[in-house]
Image 1 (tube, rainbow, N blue to C red):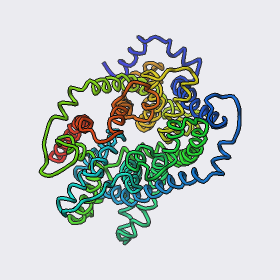
Image 2 (image 1 turned 45 degrees about the vertical axis):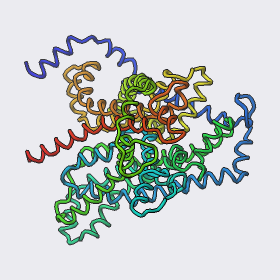
Image 3 (image 1 turned 180 degrees about the horizontal axis):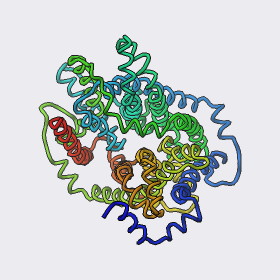
Image 4 (image 1 turned 180 degrees about the vertical axis):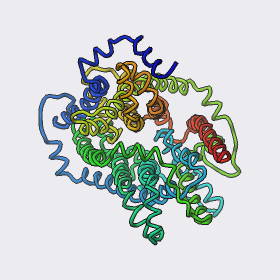
Length: 572
């Protein structure tokens, strides 16, 4: 039976109820409606209640009186300005270091790395698959007094070394480490698919490597630089985990001050006013990024990123570039190695010779608290994966496959939640849910995670859906395929990779989320909130062992990618 005959038969067998619904309303409205409803009720509602609380008198917990006294106090006082200056300084330094480190690495990945690019990218991505709490905790193992660094120092130089924790330098190290990938990958995508014919033409005209870089590669990589710079600045300015766990009381930032206002001080209106001012920075930067970003261009670049490797690189030069990228890989995975090292160590203070033990693993495996935390995280992550894939996937298809009025405005509004600091998102959702009477617990956390994850899933699906040839769908319609048949037989199979990728992102990020879980999960602990609670009072070997076991579960995927890369090279 021919393809045409098969399609005719499927069309004739399907009910036309879907097409009746489609005729009564625009298709993109159906696809976007659940997404718009979720974002407008949960995210916009949360930000609105945060703004309303900021207009209440200080130290009140109701919406009754209206005043701008909190903003007046903030602008007249010196303390918040100092916190704001500290946050901006950390953001600027973090952004500058990240750009200096990432541009050469992104250039090497996009233009110089020929072999084992996929395994290297996996190793660069691997830290993102573990939570911020775990990664920052890995640095504490190195920096704490009697930690790995001080032990190595005392062994090699026969002297004592003070703790490197609770300093501004440790905070900047943490923010640089956490947000480095957010600078690296936008620049890499900008460089990776620069048309090689343009570079070859420049060489044919006598342009050297420096001129080619300055006149072609650097200008065409500017979008990635701008996006990465704004992204890292937004995220590092609103960083709280890094500042509290690595900086301690050595430096106060806006994020730590906001958390203190909502926690210890219990002044929600003042905390809300401080949060709104920080959110305005994120809002402006997010809109700028989304106005610059062309999702169509990103889709093209990400799909052809392996076709632009520079074939004129000498072996010695290639070795230098590989060495630099591998140093970046080591830096991003160093805290993970620290956690693994600590997980096998028998004791709190590190000394040599190394005291090997498996007791912390036995304790982690038999811990009831660990099983409860894992169970709670699974009860949250699985529904979040399903819901955010359905909602975000439908929105991604609706945006990518249809032209409609206000499409650009929809893109900006739909993806803005990605750019808001998670600390503030979690706080705002907690206030909003309290007002609505939604009790904190698993259900509230699922709703919060789904609202945060749906834009990420939408983004991933859009990049895949945009690449679909519209003539395929038009041909199906010409053959009589209705709405249901077209999506089941044509559209969904073509975007299945994007949906699967979005679902994996949703599960991993929901599992690893701390901020939203911390404010919405109530008395129940997730994996990340349990880890944060355990290490709040110092080093815990059980946490190291449990974190290491999570890391072990990721390593097989990297090994598989490496094997596939080697096999492909042998076949070539």
